[in-house]
Length: 309
Image (cartoon, rainbow, N blue to C red; front, top):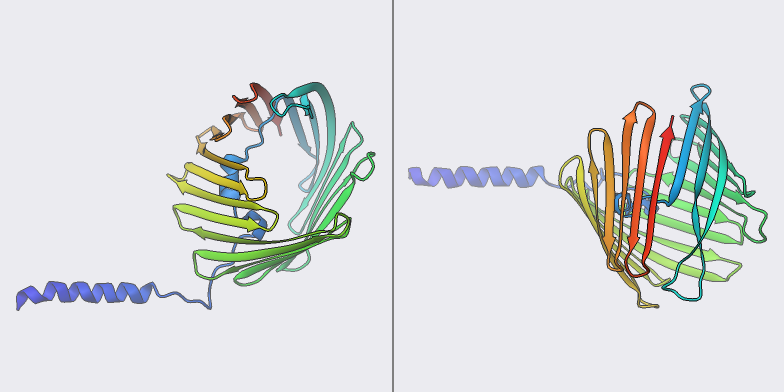
């Protein structure tokens, strides 16, 4: 009879565990925004690599207002008749910026020497409704644009309405269906080119991994997977396929955070290898080192920069 007690106790523990793991569907978490379902993968796979030299300086005038100055020197790519040939033209430009940050309001403006003006706005209209606006003004015909986003955050869902010039109208919705799984969809209509589209997305996350997938009527299929090795190291992979053009690209990347630096890199199926190093030299002074090699096109890019402030 004594041999029967251990299995009985184990069965009671298993039953208690199943009760504790019962999902409360009336108290699901709020999911990430629809346009950020791949954000962990993009941190590793979409690093802001650059070529040439860049210098960024920012100065805070008070707790809410600051100014920034940026100088960029390096080549820019222009289209060529051969897809395997890259033509580069050396350019340099200066950018002046003004920033205003408040707990419920953010204003960012940039003016460049080529005549472009960029502006961003983020305002909390309420605890659940946020207004985001982006605009670019340029002297080139039909190149100026503006977009307004209204984001609503519910208890276990997010919804967004997008309005832009050229009769652009779009909407997204994402819903948590379990504590770890969220599903969403999008629809848009662009009046001037008279194009419309639908899209669907899914995201599954735990404490150690994030998997996401997205498909759209434009032909793009995107799948990502991120594995968190530790708090400072993560590995990422993605698969991008267009069922209209039959183009396929797969890549793997990493994100390694050290005590004074951070390094991100990737390699893809087209033979492109890239890495970005961000080193903190002292308080308010960062050093940037960027490299990218395209073996197929024999295109080699190298850049370094400094960020002050």
